[in-house]
Amino acid sequence: MKKANGIRWCAAALALLLGACSLAPPLKTPVVPTAVAYKELGPWTQAQPGDRLPRDSWWTLYDNAELDQLQQRLIAGNPTLAAALANYAQARALSDQARAGLFPTLSVGADVERARESLNDPLRGPTTPTYYNANTLGGSVSYELDLWGQIRNEVAAGQANAAAAGADLENARLSLIAQLADDYIQLRSLDRDSAILDETVKTYTRALNVTRQRHDAGIAPGLDVSQAQTQLNVARSQAAQTLAQRALMEHAIAALLGVSASTFSINPQIVAINLPQVPSGVPSTLLQRRPDIAAAQRRMIAANANIGVARAAYFPTLTLGAQGGFESGAFANLLSAPSSFWAIGTNALLTVFDGGLRRAQVAQARAEFDASAANYRGTVVTAFQQVEDSLATLNHYHDAALEEKAAVDAAQRTLDLSMTLYVKGATDYLTVVTSQTAALQTQLDALNLDTLQLRASVDLIRALGGGWQDPAAAQSGTAAQNGKAANRQQPG
Image (cartoon, rainbow, N blue to C red):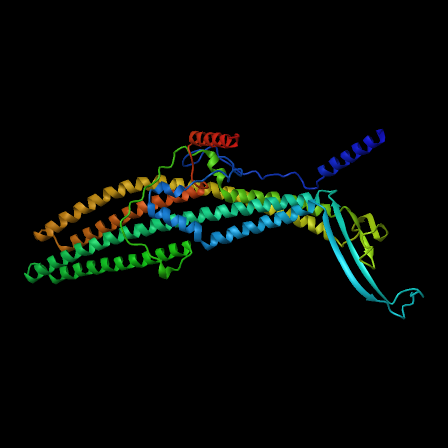
């Protein structure tokens, strides 16, 4: 009895020892220079993968039903998103393949043969039959002991790569949704530009008629008519160019939705798009939600595990195997005890000389880890830059928009006054032309600044990894969900 207990304790200790053995080095995440707070606005800390936090439908912040419908169509039909989903499924399948190495391989087979023995066989005996049956039913099992953690590191690398592919999928989704929001904002901005230019064409047409009347009456020179005609033609040209830009933007949206540009259209109209009020104190944890940072870190984890896989090749592999079954020339006694056979044993293999192959493979694995660590560091630094860029753009474009709106009012007053003076003969038409040009340009610039602010808000949300929630609201929502889950688990 004591001997049996000793054997069990030894077996348990051996299993524990083998399970703890791994040749992968400890993961060292590269140090990334960080700041205590955003230079432009808000705090920021080094990101860790938190990309599974809910992002919600952040585009609804713009309060536009049409944009919401387009986003739903994009999620359902975008080909790039479908490809990213397929890549994720492929990575998960590869991870499952690696995981299969943790388990024994079991196979069964059956063989039914009718054979003829050669009469000239040198080992043929006098009682050996010329014709005979050979029927076999059996199976085999083999299991490679993971002595050095090679299989476990392969599994870890596969899981990390699958998680990285999942983060790639989320990053593709975030980027495409943000691109659609940006394109839609630009398209509606072009609609507003078109409306201003159409109204400008009407205004310039009336001004041309005034100059023609004054010219016909001998009050104004032909130069005034020529200048008015030039202004009108330029405005018409700008209107046509704006329609061309709108067509291209509409085609880009069609491509994002995965539909033919020939069958897709968005009716031109003036649409108000809400500018979201980004919280001034954006929590630093929001940057942790960026899926590209999570993907970069998980690829670094996979590369670190691959070092362990490469180093394990220096050590022997040990495989346990067994096979058995029944073999007989007649079906009647195939499953009888005399027809049984079996074999059990181990196989050990150690490569003694490989011309430096394993050393080169370890060096390659270490270099791949160094590259993935550098990519991770670069991704985080780029994320920091993108957030700062968006915050700076929002801050300064807001101030510029206020000044530009004041310039629009001043330019319009100047235009009205110059036209009144021209009609009274108190100034020449060049003053009117200058005022017209300034008034149109300030209006277009004001609209452009509004658009730039909206686009900067999209860039900021994308840089932060998606939408956000108030921390208190998020905790309240989580508590409510946990409560509902607990209620569902209670017996009815």
